[in-house]
Amino acid sequence: MSTSPGKLIAPPSTARGQLTRIRLLEAAEAIFGEKGYDRASITDITQRAGVAQGTFYVYFVDKKAVFVELVRDLSHRLRREIAESVAGLNDRIAIERQGFLTFFEFITRHRNLYRIVRQAEFVDEELYRWYYDRMARGYVQGLEKAMESHQIRRMDLETLAYCLMGMCDLLGMRWVLWRGECPPPEVIESMLTFVRRGMEMPEASSASIPQESEGGSR
Image (cartoon, rainbow, N blue to C red; front, side, top):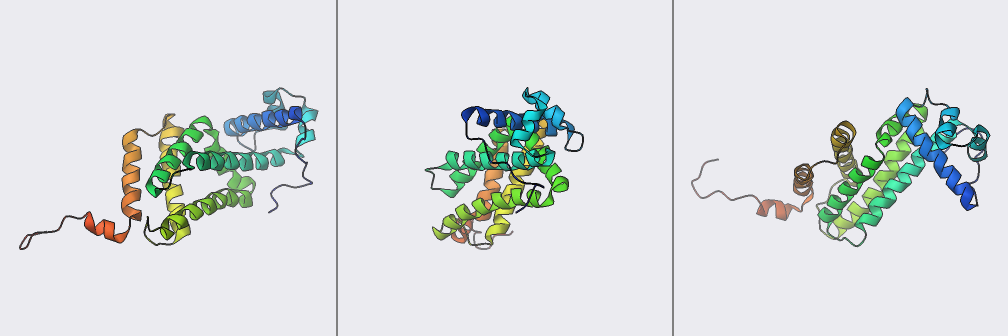
């Protein structure tokens, strides 16, 4: 997938170069979040990073290149943190709980992620689609495993992945972006109850519904 014009610059090989590149990405995250892509400038980014403007071009060919790399970097870090947090868990609902919590914790530290990803739709639509598609592909793998082990009911994997991602995304916006805090425990439990009831095996769903006594009314 091509998401940036011009040739790509290879990542730095030295520790010092890697740190400088990280500083530029962190500065870009702040600037794009505060000003938006169109109003942000390379000068803004280098000043925030505390490096000379010429240093920027050692690592990125232009403003779009650093934006593309920022979206990819945030996506990779979010997916890695979620994967690490659920490692060793086998129960799907426990995995969902921990995954949701990790997502909320991540965006609490990276609140600009919401604004940056939404800007990507207009800066580079292919990148915007890639962000969600890449997240969904990893989600599908875990859900498929849970279906194969009969932990959750059979349904369309991609649809389920996007439903879960959308619910998590909007609740994060409601609490983290608008309120500046992680969703409270009762919100997490309501979310998980909805997820559990929607995904549990049909036999479990039937068993959880009280049976009417003979002659009883609805």
